Length: 63
Image 1 (cartoon, rainbow, N blue to C red):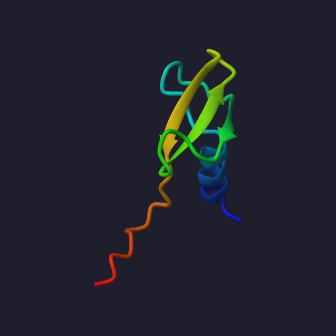
Image 2 (tube, helix red, strand yellow):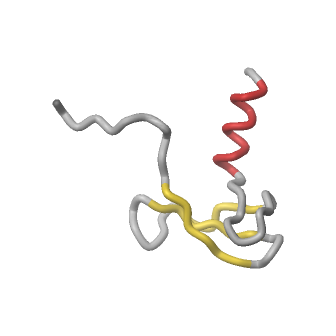
Image 3 (cartoon, rainbow, N blue to C red):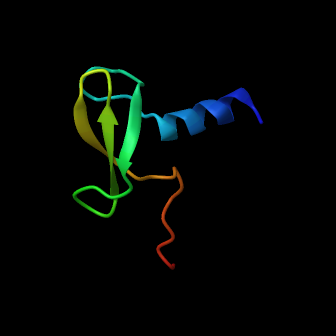
């Protein structure tokens, strides 16, 4: 597994907090206020935040 692949997986598991920039985050819930979002908790600033679920691929629109 390449270093860039590990970095991408780490970003997915521990996204950067939008408030303080810390990577000391963990997923609280797979679903947030919408089905397309996940909830995370930041241990750096003790704040909850949501992040869009996106795999980087274009959605299949059936066309």
